[in-house]
Image (cartoon, rainbow, N blue to C red; front, top):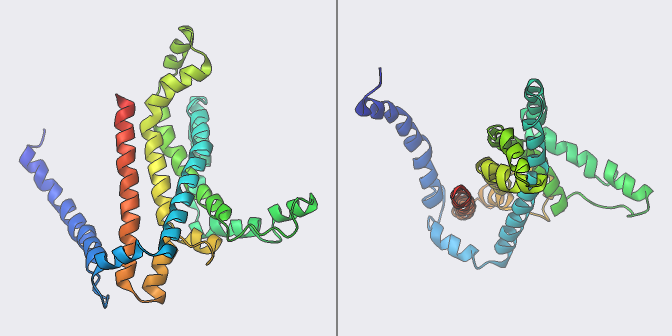
Length: 273
């Protein structure tokens, strides 16, 4: 028996109330009127930050790292997702489980592994020293370290979202395109990629948003020399005790994530035309 529209609407009320009072209200208060701030003029703080060279440098670094991380996640994750989607049916579950297994591990654990790999006496530095390509190379606390750590964190998400779209692309469509004279590359670009684009864009958006808002990985791998917006927000809230400034930084982060989501939605619609 189908529910009436009114009954269905009533069923939504508890969930909407929970979202409104448990998320939207505290979110708005924290951003625009933080109760612990001595100066609650968040927009004034935001204007001052947009004229601060140091803050703009951190914003630029955060965007640069997020864009690079997203590109790396797509380059690494999409081929893996495509391979899994074209594997025999009985093996797909196992391959997908192996690909997303890192999501079951703690972010701190995965990030600490990079401290071992990229440290001055780590694997990569040792290899570079043995090959005499670099003497005492310092790879930690660089943007390279940030991108490497964040790419490891978010590539499984890109694999998962890309696979969800690729698994619904019938292999017969590729075969038909090849039968009509298209080469493998052309068949992939004009048939598979447009159909898989929604999942790819969702993964890219999640990777970008995650890289913008990540805290633990930039704190451990970036140090104080390569701050991002998340670590800068932490300093304002817990070191300077400037909640107005922290809210202003949160506004910048929110704007960047929303801009990425809007761009992703428009690209998805354009690809569907």
